[in-house]
Length: 97
Length: 329
Figure 1 (cartoon, rainbow over the protein chains, first blue to last red):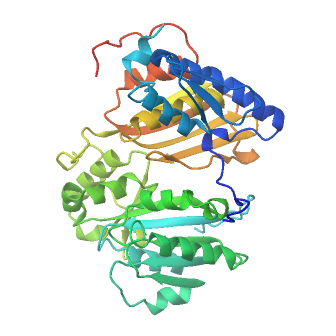
Figure 2 (cartoon, each protein chain N blue to C red; figure 1 turned 90 degrees about the vertical axis):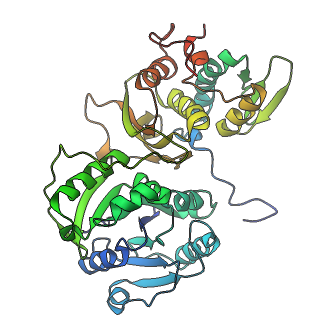
Figure 3 (cartoon, helix red, strand yellow; figure 1 turned 120 degrees about the horizontal axis):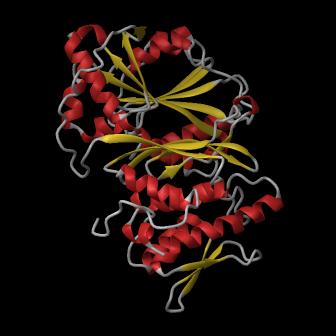
């Protein structure tokens, strides 16, 4: 890999597959954000995507926030903020709301 | 029975041939090269100990390299990646498949992960099949005592039991039941000296008692989750990425086909590592009535809880999941 330009860049995260046009990519970002927030809500966390900044912004209740490049990094940061993994099969996730 | 087919995406197919020490990998591979099952191949042989390479093997493979600098899933990983890059750089015009014969102490999942994490190889090579060989005589003992032997079987798309004729029939049936338990979705075949043979097994035979695995417990089970026309790729990918992060240790494999705006995607993972989803060609597009689905294979996964999580987050069903006790750990 070239040190100066970073080519070939690391391939995108697998969850970013499935959209081949710019419009589809943007729709994917927003549609996915809704699901991500439903998964985060039981843990008091939330994510935002303003459509312009690359990646997602992850917010903790105390005001802490972090910019993450992909969903892998998002779940990693979220587990740090929530002091445990955001588990879609946990009681917390299944009984919230 | 040539499996080699020209790929539209220009990626070079890689087949990993694994199996425990002495399972008969070289013998089996020699016969596959003789029958040209994989078409024109470049064979990479990774031996933990250096072995003389058979002339017949050399004669039937287009090219052959021996990697003797250590096991490709750990100490010899850099050598393997370098060898694969050399094959790609050499121009793969007259090549249908790369076949990697791993050493007997290699975990195929670790090799698959190393290739996926390499920024060059992930664009040039696609892992199409992991074939794991199991010795009909020694296999039950290895599966019971060696964690690695179990990990190899769990990673397989296809399991071939070698030295089939040497094992008594009741043991063959029990071994088949054991392997079906470890890798429920893998194709199970039998071979003698590399030649595929037909073996009748008793479907009601009990599996061998393998005893507890060091860090895991419970049998491996396959769970199918259907989305019909609901859900969609974004919900599924968000949910699955969270699930693999939280419970990747107990999820051995995920396979599935899911619609997306770019086409129907083929989804495959080994442990926590998801391969870049491939777009299925048009002729493999779903027939009417065939919706999105994934098959999740793992250990100790509560099917009720899994379905509830799927319904809630992928299908977007509102309301509390029924039958979920709050005191579950």
